Image 1 (cartoon, rainbow, N blue to C red):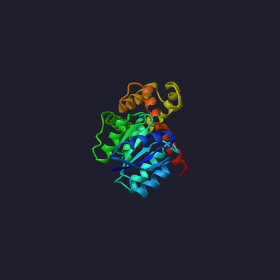
Image 2 (image 1 turned 180 degrees about the vertical axis):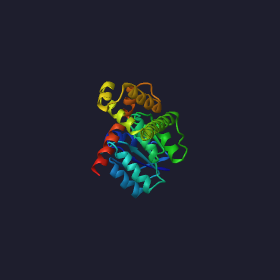
Image 3 (image 1 turned 90 degrees about the vertical axis):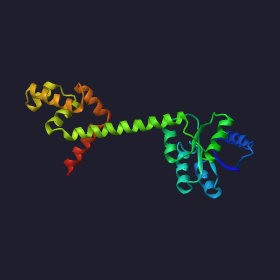
Image 4 (image 1 turned 30 degrees about the vertical axis):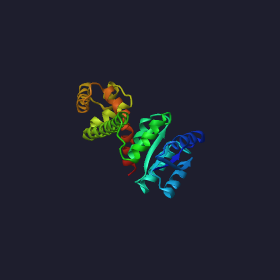
Length: 231
């Protein structure tokens, strides 16, 4: 028998899952709860084989929070997440925590039963749709991290003059205004801009400034500068 605990805060859905799963001779419902807190408590007391866990109950992340606590203390329990829609971020976070699978609330009876059985027997394959979500999330995180680190590394290699010029461009000064402000010739400024663009691998100053603002690098630099001045 697969001993199952159901955590779902909508009474109608909770009754539906209980009614459907009780038709399966291999499944025994040992508890039905309506909050993440209860799911943690009853899991600790009853030690179910599988928890069918709604992501959003008393709070938006109640299911994920409960999952984290259960798997930290009782890693042998298998958890299948219940969700209304396939939100990439939530699904990815659930798999990061160690859930066995997820199932849409609109899924058929057969899909629900199969997910529970697969989780229990440790044969939960990474379905193509899940693999794609995980791939996209890893790619997004990797791209953002590399872009930020890459650009900060370039910033650290700029000369004080190049960094000053970059800040002035970001503040909206025209090239002529920068020349007047810093008492330099237009040809000198042009050389500085060319050198910085080359370091960033960009064709235009606008493209370079937009990218740095998207990564909030100027905010970081200004914060660091203020911190240094305080000391």
